[in-house]
Length: 107
Length: 210
Image (cartoon, helix red, strand yellow):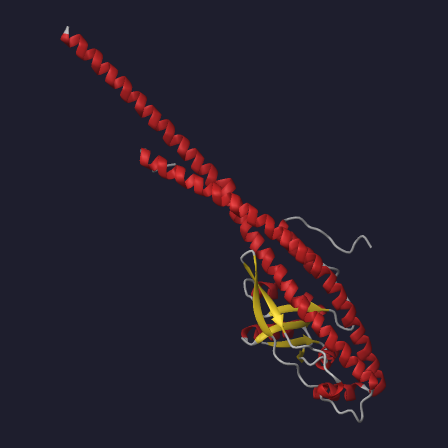
C-alpha cells in the first residue's frame, strides 16, 4: 500500500522531503478527479490531502469512501495554517450519538 | 395482525419469537453502549493526536519556507525530487467489538542524512532540518489517518446498531406483543363459546330425555 499526498505546490514539495510522492492540484474539479482516480487504484493506502482542498470536496469524497476500509483520507493543514476547527470530529459525534458536541470553543 | 392463524401452535411460535427479539434487543443495546464508550475513548486520543500533528506540520512548513528563502524555490523543488521514497505501508486490521478497523505498519520514517538520498555538497543544514521535520510529521499523519478512520467506522457501526435497537424497540416487539394478545383473546373467546355450546347441548339432551 502506498501513501500519496495531494495539495498545492508547496504542500507536495514539503511531503516529498518526508519521502512521500504527491500530485499538485489547483482547483476543485481537479481535486475531485484526482481523488476519484486514486480511489479506483487499488494500491493506495493513505491519501494525505491539504485541508483547504478537502473542505471543498468533503461531502462527495466521504460518500465515495463510506463503507470502504481503504484508502484512508486524512486532511491536514498546509502552510497557510489551520482553517476549520474540529469540524470533522463534531460531525462524526453527531452522526454516532445524535448529539452535537463542540470542541475548542471554551478556549 | 391480518392473516395470523388462530391456533395454539401459532401462539407458541410467536411467544418464542418475542423472547428472541427481547434477548436480541438487550444484547444490541449492550453492544451499542460499549461501542459508544469505545468511540469516546478513541475520540479523546484523536483530538490530542490531531493537535500534535498539526503543530508538527506547522513547524515543518515553517522550516520549508526557511529553506526556500535560503536556497530559492527552484532549487528546493529539485532537491525534493531527489529525496528517496519511503517504503510501502502494511495494513492489518484490529477488531473493536466486531468492527474491523485498520492499523498501519511502516518502518520508521526517520532516516539519517545519507539515507535521504539528496546530494550533500550543495545542500545545507536548513534542508536537513526540513526533511527531518517532515519525516516526523509524516509519522503523526499516518497515526492520525488510522485513528480517524477507526472513528468513522465506529460511528457507522454505532449508527447501524442504533437503528436496529430502535426497530426492535419501537416496531418488532410491540407488534409481536399485540399479536400475541390478540390470539390469546381469540382463543379464550373460542373456548368460552365451545363451553357454552356444550352446556346448551347438555340441557337440550336433558329436556329430551325427560
